[in-house]
Length: 268
Length: 308
Image (cartoon, rainbow over all chains, first blue to last red; front, side, top):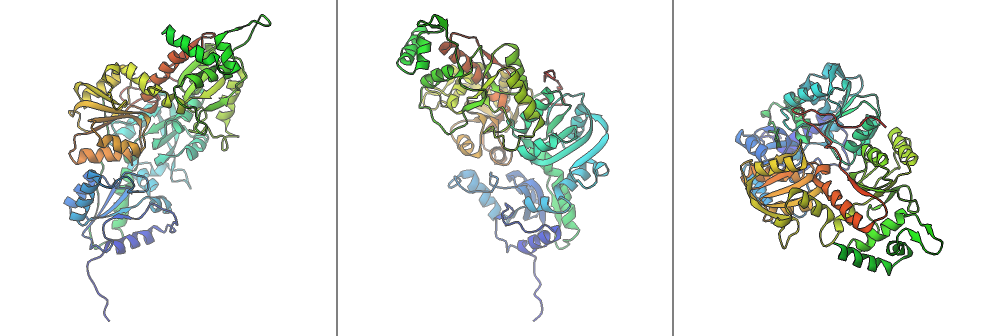
């Protein structure tokens, strides 16, 4: 019997992306289809930092219906639907996803497990830091001499990040930078701050954990800095790279990156 | 309020021997000697006056020093940062009552820090200055009739007259906008790096507060209620913040303000110093304000004291 050809489905594309990542299957993971029917025929792929309603609308408007998002659609780390029964925003988002035949896939753990780490590779490329990468570590960089303030300004500009926040002496001399794209848990953040780095760059760290630790290190006389970009700003361009990477092995449908707009605004 | 102070002392006098020290402060009549106030004495008075049941099992406990150590002075602070400890030691306030942790986790876990150089330095400083550190988080929030943090923040914002009569977290303010609300936080709290989600022109009257960290629940429930704006200190970008972002994306008239954790709660520890000063007359009680942890490239500053 001749092989049936037809439109490619979400499941077929997800299987191919997982296979190409080379990341072993995790037994516990948040990477799953959180909304939509996996057998849906796909007309385009959209990658994004978080499956926000606004980004889903832009993806649907461009005819992309397989969504690969680093952070999930339903407002919890594990895309839990607990407490959301009858929630009008939940219903609106679900109905939008249904009406546009979207399939939302959380693309978080296995993107990081890819060798090398897909997110770290993409962020380094976007910042022009790839050539400064310390051998064997996708998240450690030896930059041309700068200061904490100039590094923060540079990140603010390149990442379109109006509400970037910085701990430490603006004049701190900076060469060695470690990055934890996304979120910095207490560990490894504390361990990293104790290595010979000048600055730790991350998306989010708890104020009573790594932020307090960085402040205390500085108060104890250590020359350290900490930069908090915000989660989306710290992963967005890594998802741009993700679209470019997928396009190298998917030619049936277009692959597009949907950039996040700044999540927050501040006042000068 | 001397009457209240007196009645508190009457309650205390019927309690433990520690409480007797309040009723008969400092002088021990039997021996004519001064009896030093201990941390245990202070804690006993706090327990009796918190207005609610004292529960075990939370994070409130002695983190450094011990209950039997004499108290020369009391410092309240939002977070027992190294700088806060330096300030306490410099002012001879050796009992530090802190709302947030000393050792960089909610539970002040030490299992992974035994060889940590900063842990050793901070501990050595605490010991060298005879400091006692008490983590006072859960019970200060449980304070009745009003959460002590909520009370102090409302006072700092000038909002005590606006508190909703049925929901103590909610404030019914004179009409403003989200941008106007942000400016009032910025000026009252000296907050350089506060952030908001939602339309700056959003009409605001009802504000619900969750000072400190807010998880997705109850944060989402607060956002869905009557209030125009939810104000928190800190929240995660992929849960509560994402919900607020989607509310805005769906055109709903809601806003979220993130003040930063320390700045969103620390005046609650100013209120704590006022409360303790009513309970403890033997030694000075002072609130130690903290710096804002962050700066933005548009306003770089360096405020951390790097001298030990």
